[in-house]
Image (cartoon, rainbow, N blue to C red; front, side, top):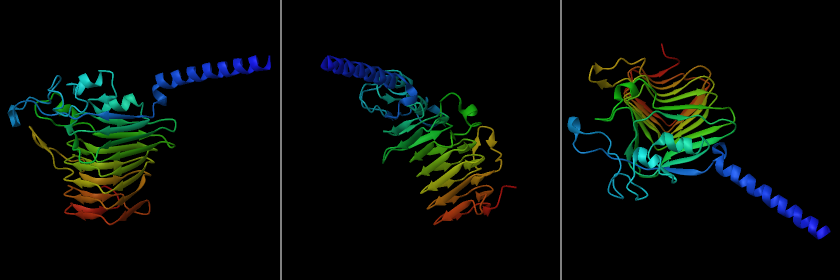
Length: 285
């Protein structure tokens, strides 16, 4: 009877383990796995004759089709594999708890939201050598005007969450990267160019480490109506009670300040801060 009891116990444990595995597999909040974002390319024509981003199907292996199935963009988002055509769909797939890697060159005209909760951690990165441009403006693509009124990357994490963004570009938004709440963020090899108000904006009680990055021409952006009005046009700002460090980073060509919010709560080292309206400012006027 003891043997039978042991076998029954083991069987019950295995059944519970199988149920637990099924729950892990089907519960997005427990994802914590890597997914890939494919690239994309522009359609026929160039300049004012461009027709926006090309859509599926494409010749397998072209236009950033990483897995060779001929799908890119929204079609790749919905084909049921581990590759995605947009950053947002990939972030949703890991439920803000995992690693999202862009594996082929592309332009991504989408607001990217990274909002981990409950101790989750998320990394968004482009693979080495990949040019990943999160851009508000793509010639021939619907929604350019609306996107230019929004931040490019919004990070809103919890106090026990961690966010990493590495090797991406963000262009033509109000803020290239906007960091909210109690987020803990590492920005590494991030390029923010031609964003109207801020290149990188750390607010509230966020904690932000910026390394090996480039923030250029903040406040200088023109559209069909002419030059935009920067509010205020600062490269990197630490606002409120935000704290951080900026290391080995270039900040140039800002309309107002290169780095704003300096003081005991912001550590600076080995940076190139040049050709801004004011290179350093204790706080935006």
